[in-house]
Image (cartoon, rainbow, N blue to C red; front, side, top):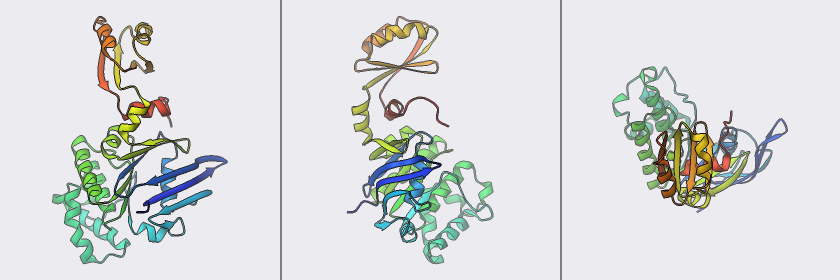
Length: 303
């Protein structure tokens, strides 16, 4: 089966600077593919290029078999998009927002109405069909935006930070729904700043920085290949003085604010030494995708 989205040599420049710089990306059908990167890495521009909303300076984009942007209209008829910012109509009820959006895809009223109960249940909004948008909480609006993106039963769903603003219960509800979509053969392209979300949902992850993909693989593979297996996070008074000791006990140390991250294969010696330091506190945990992300893209704040 052809890749739902295949990109080769994609380049986009603004003001002489390459925001996307020769990027290659291929997404497997029926899987969740994560596109991760710090602010300004080129994620949103890549998505806009892939959807045919802007034109590339160079490269080739095939979206559901259509060359972009020439085939954007035909391709987007089979794509659902959850944007970063909700764009719900405040004058409509929840049901009316879904009905109106379905008409953009040329769907008949009866066809859209038949899908509304399933989508409201998917978003945990079954009791809110007649509620107005202003009466919804921020989390409810976000879930309605996700439901709206599925109105045309798309083959590919592009999710740009879909769970921003959701509480833990709502995030888990959305995660369950997204897993059901891939179980039905839908393809998901996800951007998120929540590394735990990417680690839970994604079959494959591409980390992008400075307009290029710097690494790609499954979450488990990326963790195994790029980071030590165990982490001890250390806090407290006297940390600066203890750092020299830490460097002799673990393979690698990184400072971030008032914390020291000790990366090691064997946390035993580190923990034994910390137990003799009453002014220091620590957290021992397995390495995770966030550790990989920070190692590869740095801990400096991006604006």
